[in-house]
Image 1 (cartoon, rainbow, N blue to C red):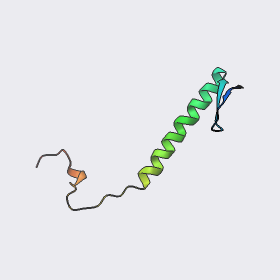
Image 2 (image 1 turned 45 degrees about the horizontal axis):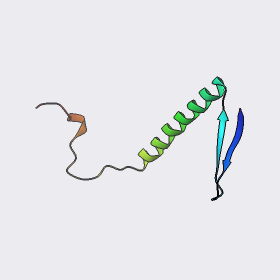
Image 3 (image 1 turned 90 degrees about the horizontal axis):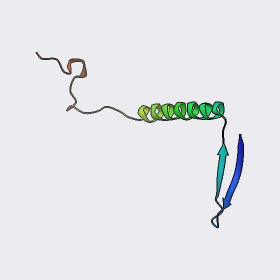
Length: 64
């Protein structure tokens, strides 16, 4: 991987250019997808189901 500094900004940040090989790009994409899935799972663990107004999901969509 080659990293090139394009410009340094007055606020201290900088713009870079990354030249990735096909294997590096695939690895980065795979890593990003896995991290997004893990973040979604962590967020889902924070959710709780409460209240009497919830339907019984074991019978959802079934007619009596």
